[in-house]
Amino acid sequence: MRTIVAAAIALLVLQSAILCCAAEPPVTETSTQKSDYIFKAGQIAFGASVAADLWSTKVRLFDNPGNGFREANPMLPGTLPGFASVMIGSAALTEWGSLRLHRGGHKWMARGILWGGFALHSWAAAHNWRLTPAGVPVR
Image (cartoon, rainbow, N blue to C red; front, top):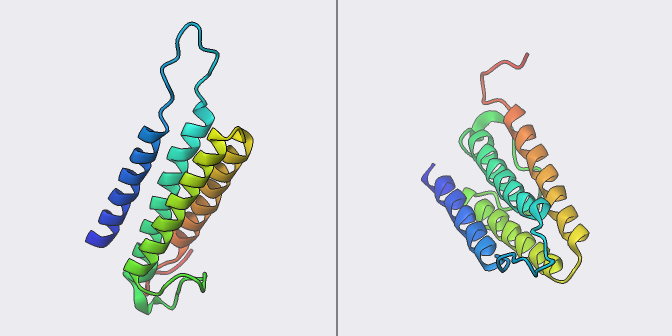
């Protein structure tokens, strides 16, 4: 449990660091820049969905190894620390890449990547949560 909490905290700290580095200059009366709230909301939603996916995978797969379920992605390690490091690393790379795209003027592509990742990890978290521990009947 401590490992998953530490991983979630590390992800949130990393996301906060990315958001702080990505802070836009203050909008003044002469500035024509508008803050991109859709992109910022996508960053937060993506980070939250990755944390939810990581937590649901830990609870349903790693805490109940005898329930007959295993990770469906063969590229992910079978241990929780390995799984968390790969997932957090890929989430950080996705956040960084989308930030670079956003700063480079590809705002719609950056938004699409973040919201697509949000949808993917939210689905994975919901799917993991549907898996039941051994001995619990499914209705």
